[in-house]
Length: 349
Ligand SMILES: Nc1nc2c(ncn2[C@@H]2O[C@H](COP(=O)(O)OP(=O)(O)OP(=O)(O)O)[C@@H](O)[C@H]2O)c(=O)[nH]1
Image 1: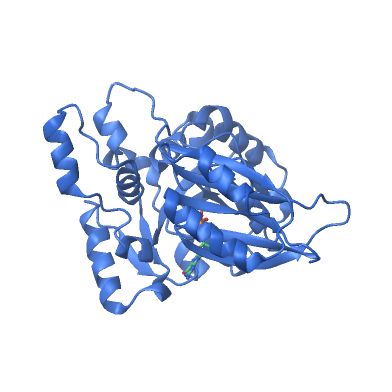
Image 2: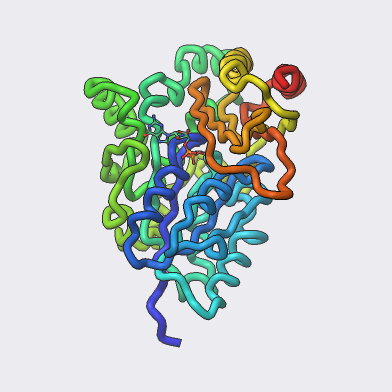
């Protein structure tokens, strides 16, 4: 078989950075390229898949969108990712390009390393790793730990050598990047953006190209066709975990938790959103997203919260025979009080 390798673009970035928004935009301006999309999400509610299937792009139909839902892709490479790729490559009509959206909590390194597996390596190559950054969150210091506090904790307990899990993950995703998209530029001013650039640059030694974007609007010609072959350079992009556990201790996501809250119809969506903002900031919820059944409305309300910033809009009509319900996935650090968050949200319906 003498086929050209299919390029695969890995799109990573922390929870809510704008990966799905950027991919949605990409699908609508990818020209005639037939794209297969592999989507991985943290939490048991396929919101990203729903959003992307809903965009109706002809070059990427519902059949071409594959959801990997058994946990973060970096931990399920052998069981989930490799079999999915193998099946995709056996299709009669192979895609021109594969786009993979990792969960916001995934380390891209194990995924890129999987492209060196014998069955995959001969058929696919990593075109490039693109890391999407929420510039507003960086400007607000969400990825900067309080270093004085960490130093104080370390002085008390020498075995503590970790930065915060969020900060580590942020750096690991930057370390693996071939291209960094500083997204959400509409939410900060020019001086703030300059500081974000400096902060991002200071957290990766490899210094990949950075571009700025609003709503993930980046031409397909920039995102696709980088031609890097990242799998050959994976040794230069080690994650904190790999550097600390060269002996192969498995990486996990114990620091983070997610759960789904299901409730009935909501009568006052504006009041619901305001109340959610309070719950999110009281309990340090990192990400909340899902769909809301608004009483008396034929349309479904999509709700997307990143920190306490909430976007919401009616995305489509409820289908005939579809069970109307409000379902929200909540993601936070392990310390988040699930019982209290659940009770507070359930009390709103
Ligand atoms: N103001 C603003 N909002 C944005 C921008 N890009 C994305 N968003 C919003 O940010 C929220 C999260 O965007 P997503 O594209 O779902 O982020 P994601 O990285 O796919 O999120 P996860 O998959 O949950 O990690 C949504 O409400 C988007 O509409 C931007 O450039 N500016």
